[in-house]
Amino acid sequence: HLAESGGGLVQPGGSLRLSCATSGFASNYYAIAWFRRTPGKEREGVACISSDGSTNYRDPMKGRVTISRDKSKKAAYLAMDNLSPEDTAVYYCASSTTCTWGSFAYGFWGQGTQVTVSS
Image 1 (cartoon, rainbow, N blue to C red):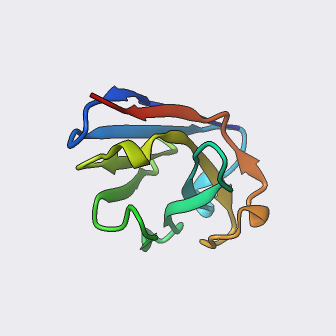
Image 2: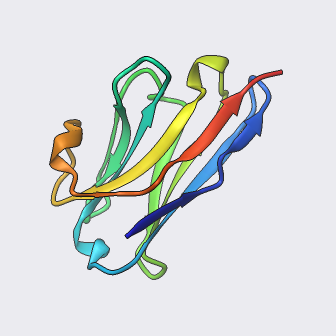
């Protein structure tokens, strides 16, 4: 089970930190990724962190987001900076054995958290 939190309304140029709480499986041994879905578009990968802590980022948010995890809390986080209206989306965390951008590879998903960037 994964549960996202931390979404909300933020002004352009603002920041948000999303959280992903995990339970019911040994998430510390898995990669955790953040995806997002904007209206009319396919779900796209944003960032991923492997079980060993190595990170991967994908455009268009690369350079504006930082993914991290706290194994003691079985949680992962996505810090987002310099947000723009184009970043408005539902953000999901997901878990798989390894980092990959193919959403089909992820068997565990959260319900998503809405991020709205607007003035």
